[in-house]
Amino acid sequence: MDRLRVLSSQVAGPTAGAHGLQHGAVPWLGPTACSGSRGVLQNFIGGQFVASAVGTSICVTNPATGKEIARVPEGGAEDVNAAVKAAVSAFTGWRDTPAKARVEVLFRFKTLLERNLSELTAVVVEEHGKNAGEAEAEILKGIETVAYAVGIPDLLAGRNLEVSRGVFCQEVRRPLGVVASIVPFNFPAMVPLWTLPIAIACGNCLIMKPSEKVPLTLMRMAELLREAGLPPGVFSIVHGAQAAVLALAEHPGIAAVSFVGSSKVAGLVDATARAAGKRALCMGGAKNHLIAMPDADEEMMIS
Image (cartoon, helix red, strand yellow):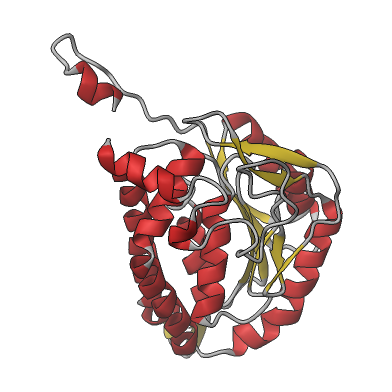
């Protein structure tokens, strides 16, 4: 508990200078809405933090205190259009970048995630409410996926097969293009890192929509990706709720969509994406059950 209090205090609003997260020092923050809030967040498009085209926003609260810590713009089609435009512009150059050079960016990103582990843990604790141990563990699991992506060039190699006498078959692996990932609130770091490093390593350009409940962790990751040298447009963040989700699923410039969340929304995203001719990978209805036996330590179970 002592560690949790320390981590929470390090990111608790404008005085949180320990990690440079205070309002006014971070490029993705808009005007402060109230004392202790980071204000309205910005999208990350074309390698820059830019204001949403939509003026309305959703409150993000610290579950431990119930207080506002930021606001998320209720983005929609206009924000998605801007992100797709930036991604399309970046795709040809990123696709043609040798796989070895692509994963060098991810290796630097992995190093930055490890170097900033304490800060990222604190952000997850603040916006999600899980304890420091669980927050750190999910980031470490996400880093494992980045490490896997760094070794992906060997898996991208094609092959030539003689399938019959005098008949040859060539297998070539190519990126899809612009892809989208819609991620849930329960793992602000781990689930985004399921798709982010793989999509990028394979030569795609990725647009990600974080949960409107926990947007801060992914925003910090965007800064680290930029610091690692990822070219503008290869990775974008669009904030929002249902309008943003549907815009991503419907957009003709997006080739594939992945989704993790509730079964109801997974079905909606899957149907919408398939109707638009996209590939869709939708995971819905996952649960993290905890069964407490009569002899369980209640203090340990609750914490």
